Amino acid sequence: MKKSGIVGNWHGMVHCESCSIHQAALFSVIPIENLAEMRLPIEDIQFNAGASIYDIGCEGSAIFTIRSGLVKLSRFLPNGSYRIVRLARHGSVLGLETLLGSPYEHTATALSPTFTCRIPRDIVYELALSYQELYQQIMQRLCDSVHQADEWLTLLATGSIRARIARLFLYLEDKPHNSLCTLLGREDIAAILGTTPETTSRIIADLKRSGAIHHLGLNRFRCNIQMLHTIAKES
Amino acid sequence: MKKSGIVGNWHGMVHCESCSIHQAALFSVIPIENLAEMRLPIEDIQFNAGASIYDIGCEGSAIFTIRSGLVKLSRFLPNGSYRIVRLARHGSVLGLETLLGSPYEHTATALSPTFTCRIPRDIVYELALSYQELYQQIMQRLCDSVHQADEWLTLLATGSIRARIARLFLYLEDKPHNSLCTLLGREDIAAILGTTPETTSRIIADLKRSGAIHHLGLNRFRCNIQMLHTIAKES
DNA sequence: CGTGACATTGAACCGCGTCAACCTCGGTGG
DNA sequence: CCACCGAGGTTGACGCGGTTCAATGTCACG
Image 1: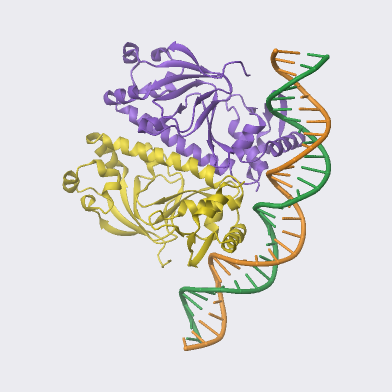
Image 2: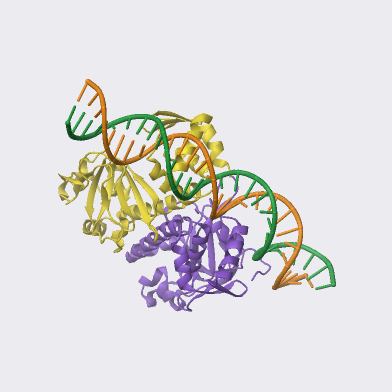
């Protein structure tokens, strides 16, 4: 899970035209043959678990596409506590606010080994001149972020902690591999739900006892979707 | 505060070129003389306090610019409770998700008499063809929404209810008319903060006693900004 | 003057935070 | 190879903050 390095590792320039997630990526609107001949200065950067991708308040000049991995976006309160406001995965784009001239609005931290493409802001501007559909793509991403944020608030910041944890399990469930779920560290869960690691731990133990989830080792769980849905509706 | 009608009242077509909030509006990027000759099918619609502007899940074909008034955007939970996820005021644009083909993602309800311009989606598409800067405008609005949502979560859904209420006062303060603040009904406040009307009422009474706020009648308050900031930092 | 919607207050209960002890497990060094 | 160590997870006891339910107060409006 965790290795030595804290900062991202540069791994050379990427070839968008042969990207594994091309069809899900921002530049999917650009014909592959054109991408191939453009030689864009897009870098492949990897982050170990725990590494920071960028920090809140920093003037950035690039966005990041996540090819694989899991990233948390956090914000801080005057009193020093913090809250995770979103998770980003495969296909997400981070730091879109820099396209509009704002500094980064979150601290982005890798939760698992994460592979990203760093795309300089100016490249996006340039491409948008020739490919107006790129605007649609960006608008779509922003719209998705708004939707995600609103759902986050209603699902994961409302009601009893028990219900929130059930909703988090359902939220994290790998839909393809049915009813399997990889959970985060207790402190991260607490920062998502607005509670404490202790309460989190207690309630998860409770869910295990009641049979709503089964521990498979190393934070992997098999979920009883039915029961979790019932609990999610409570309170 | 509340009159008879529940639905919006149609008040004729608007003249964008002479709009009171033109410089803050979506179409500010379009030269006034061009706006004048276009005769856009944009309607002026008013809503009384309590009236619904649109409902979550409905297929919409228009966005709304708020010329004046106050609007709450709500989402609902499986168990019937609901949460206010954002407030919109003078200059805000509602329903941008329809531009991307999604149904409305909130129920939008006027909290005070509200004057809006209803702009059909197709008009935006059309104008964007000639005025690409319009995309920047829309992206800016979306980005603002994301930022607002994230702040909402960290400020108004985190920490003790006492701290949240203090932050809400600071959030609602009319910056120009210093330290004055118009509060909402207790139930709406509760739906913003994720608590109950009773707790809200109790804590507001407490803040009055401690001198952090002074009641001026009909939900108007004069705030002691210093004290509120101190309380906002607690817990 | 009566009525209904909303705000306030009280009292009892309990969910959750807090603090502290203990356990578990993977990594490290002797 | 094993014993130790430290980080993170678990569990217990206790108290506070916030919910709940119910009664009462307040004000705008018919």
